Amino acid sequence: MDSADPGRGSAESVYQNATVRLRGSRRAAQSALLRSVLVACRGPHTGTRGSTLKRIALATSAVAAMIVGLLGVAAPATAVEEQQIGAGAYEDCSLEQPGFVVTSTNWGPETTRISIDIDRDLDGIPDFGDGPPVDPGQTLTLPYGVEDGQYGVRISTDRGVLFDEVITVWCALRPIDILPQLTVAAENTTREYNRDMFPHWIDADNDGCDTRDEVLIEESTTTVTVGSGCAISNGTWLSAYDNQTWTATSDVDIDHMVPLAEAWRSGAWRWNEEQRTAFANDLDVEYALLAVTDNVNQSKGDRDPASWMPPATDYACEYATSWLLVKYRWSLTIDTDEHNALDSVFSGDCGTREVTIPNRAAVSPPPAPISFTDVSGHTFQTQIAWLADQGVTRGWSVGPNTYEFRPQQRILRAEMAAFLYRLAGEPAYTPPATSRFIDVSTSHTFYKEINWLAESGISIGWSTPRGAEFRPQQPTSREVMAAFLHRYVGSPAYNAAESPFRDVSSSAIFYKEILWLASEGISTGWDVGYGCREYRPSQNVLRAEMAAFLYRMENGGTPPITTNECSPPQPDPSPMYSGTVSAGAFCARANSGWYGYTSNGTLMQCTTSATDTRLRWRAA
Image 1 (cartoon, one colour):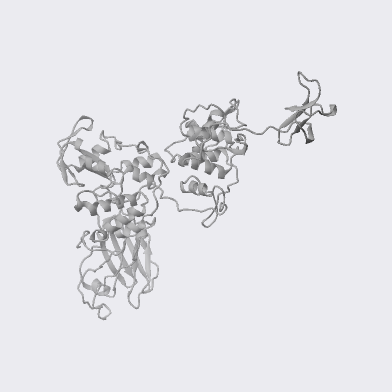
Image 2 (cartoon, helix red, strand yellow):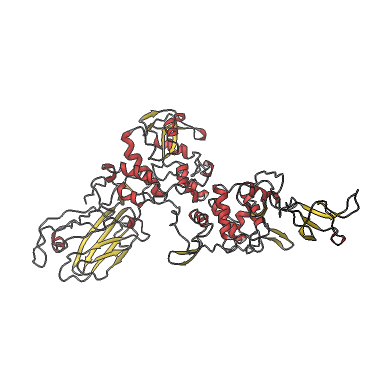
């Protein structure tokens, strides 16, 4: 059987043209009634680092163009006609239940049934089979879990075997097919990036060589010497970015095709530590990590193709394609400028090259944006929307694509644990097999998050004679919220000269934490007039307020409050004389001790003095 060249041709979609020809003599004559059989891959590509798979190819044998059928009727002028199905069928290449697709166009007037048998391991024994009735012109889809490789395929009708061949299947696309599948969104610059959140380099296979070493060994154009501790020498590395050759490992950096900071802003901030580690050490595709000239890599920094491309212009197509495939593999977003830059590179022949589709990495793509039906016009509408965009909460689903946030509902301690764990990026954490709290079972919805909160030192609950309690259903008070957030950011030192709140004294249990919160502008309490403010520490926090607090903590708060400027007017003394008084004028004994105002508003009192025993209106 002749094998189709996987490196030739141009596909219009994931479904490639398939020419099916049949073996000779009587079977061929009988099968001449078949005008077209199309077999397509509907499964994910499984290529790994170094894979050369390029397209779906169906390899078959040849047959004469004109044959006489068993029934004595002339065969069609073209015994087998090439056809194509599924234009733009990109998504079908990632179906969980992929399969073969057969389209019948002319099985013959007496054909009422077709069947297909799949021999997955080529042992001559069909592993799967099916035989539903199909009318001419109908399509038969058989979900048999297709992966790259070879398959024995036999297609039969009630009139005999039509096709009996070994087919070879590849799954491929062009860059112009893949680019529209990426989500275009503004980069998230509100979450602080820290390179340490992407642990690298690691020794994943425990062979003594870490990820950097593995790339150096694999990409050297000469055989390297690997010494003790995986010390590498005698290698030669060609930097694709600038076409320079190096023989010293110190001259070479291992570049993340998509820089860690770029990945963070494009969605990796949502990942847990395990997923970030996998991205930073991705050896499963050959273009994720490259050995390149160190100062060229440093000039790239964390820039995307909109602001940086390799100095070697002949590598532009390969670079843009690799960038695209890494973004696709890890379900990362692209911003508008980045999209336009890639689209420009793919506008020529580069965009129509067939490329191997990488496996999707085990990370969830950004959730679809949602809007809540119950926050329109709310004071904290912007902050609530931000909270949802960060993946901290999606509220309650109350119907198809319909969600409620319930802003006036009190936030419970268990929910606070979940909010902070998600805000932290859902770090890798395995909760204990036995709960540390007697009131939080291992089946609790937020068991993992509550134990993470405790292990992080944010809240260890209450010690009771029966054991530790977390009290997950208890509402979170404002003073407890202050303590949680202060500990969440690492318990920074803070010394306050005075309390800016008239209801928070220096003896308050969370005095420091509350004043730190105010100094950061996260919560400045209520203005109750005359420069006076109240924090109301025992008041429960509402979900809308929590959205505002977290938003301010991550993005900058309102103007901070650090001093006490409370200066309320003194209340009028009592008893008060109803008329206007005159300074120094005599007043009646019945009005002794009373107060009154002069015509210009000066407060006076009817009293005696040390030198005058007579009652007069004197300055109070």
